[in-house]
Image 1 (cartoon, rainbow, N blue to C red):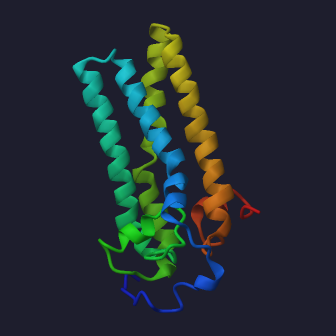
Image 2: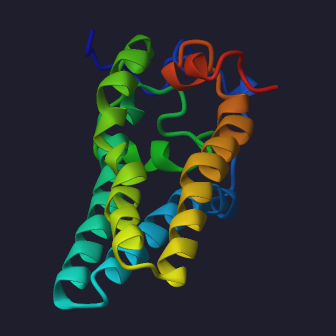
Length: 186
């Protein structure tokens, strides 16, 4: 099922059904993910008081955030109908086309389920590191960072994804994320 297909095959995309996004819109659509990564990076730095270990942990988290986005581009995007189009809300599809050939869209759900867990720790690691420190040695700064991170990661980012990018996706009925959310976003 990993067969390559032509990127001009009308079966894998119907541009009349897909909205096109400008580069500026793609950048804006990435703000929630970027904000989560930046907040997580700051939390890692703050938990260790700006020490060398804190900066190393913060740098590692930031690198994981960037690698995670690239991972999705390489291992999920080639199976998406948005691959190599301006219809990808975050622009990953056009970037993915520079690294991987188009694959069959029928495998999208399988690849999504398989590879999304790779980036899931990005949502939990800052909380798992920050909460014990807030409990052990209370800091208003860290508490506020954790609350803002939690709101961003668990409310804003999923809400923006579901109500914006996923809403117009031609694959929303087969997408594990949208199936998990119940009905497709209206």
